[in-house]
Length: 133
Image (tube, rainbow, N blue to C red; front, side, top):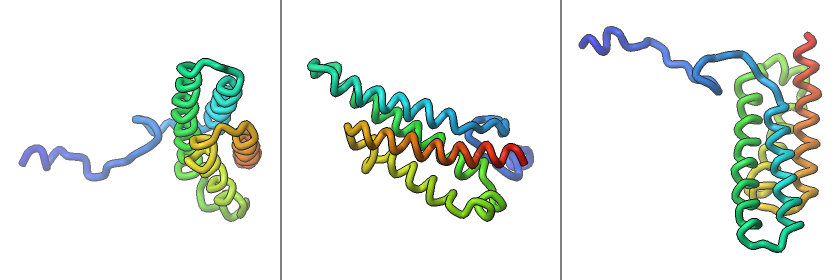
């Protein structure tokens, strides 16, 4: 009974344990650059063990790209942003797919990584415009 009495009435969730309000698309971009570097190093190597590590790291970093994009998409951007920038949902959808199984996570094509970085840059441009307001 005491446990119920002192239990929180509302549980909140954020990208960290403390809703810090610190957001930056650079986190997603850095991981995407790492993905691209892993793909390039994969193609430059003849060592099968090294190539296996490169693929593993590329897949982990692709997941991190999606994570950082989702945090921006769901936690930072609000309804007024989506109204002012109607292409924003589409950009996030395209970018997260480019980081997923049909994109860099499942591909060893440098061009796919370049496309991912370009989408993140488009999102970043809008992000920084919203910070000026």
